[in-house]
Image (tube, rainbow, N blue to C red; front, side, top):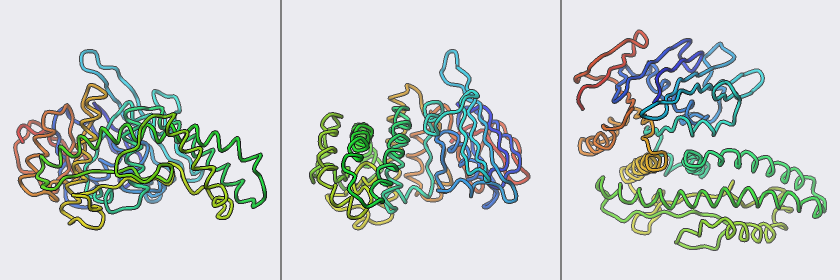
Length: 371
């Protein structure tokens, strides 16, 4: 549970302190007042990156040269354990700093302390957008289940950079490439294996949720990678199996890599695909169906985290009610109303509440009595 949030120079906030309630909180205010920025800061605290912006410098308040986010977390039910999470970005040094209880750590490690799931209008990009967004989403879910995944991705990126630097030299470097290939295979096979394991569980939940939300067509998914032979079924998640196939695929692609001077396959090039009745959801589904798939993905993510961590993740609902009809709005509320902590944004709220206070001159936080 998030008990205190402090922002400095984040988006439109010069200074802000937020004391979220336990249970269901509604943050109300006019469009453009910063409601989504508030949820974005909480998501950043729990993941190490933004769900709306690829570049951290764009999160810094205009005229400032840094932003900082500080959150006090309590984890557990009977005797909650306190944690302090801190995220900061410095413009001049182009440096991100993540701290857990005062000690620096990798951005992905915070996911183990503040598991968070965001629902927002941007979720449609999980279906319509580029592969990088889907890889990022899947890796976040994997990291929330296995915190070590963040470190392996970081190591993999470092090895990939060294291998690509060798390829750009354009000379015969076979002897120098072998050690990098082995490291790439070692880290890459672990990444792929974990992705497949989590994706299998995620798709199980997603297909059930999709049907419950009113999807009338069978939903399936696939992990698309040049490491594996083409197939409609998910590959085995066994790490040794992934390692053998990755090593063979990398060897077979060596001549192409040398010609293009870049590593052409691996987990950095993989993708997720979703199908309704066998048709690719990106091209053959309506926007309403795509939105339903994205919503099912996020609900599936929250269920996996609740099963894995034995407590519900923090749920952030960023203006999603305006995107849903009355029936699905009710279904989403029923899914999360019993969670320990949910924070939702709306432009206007006139329902019942227990308590309220002013965050800014235009944003009000309300502790909802009934949904």
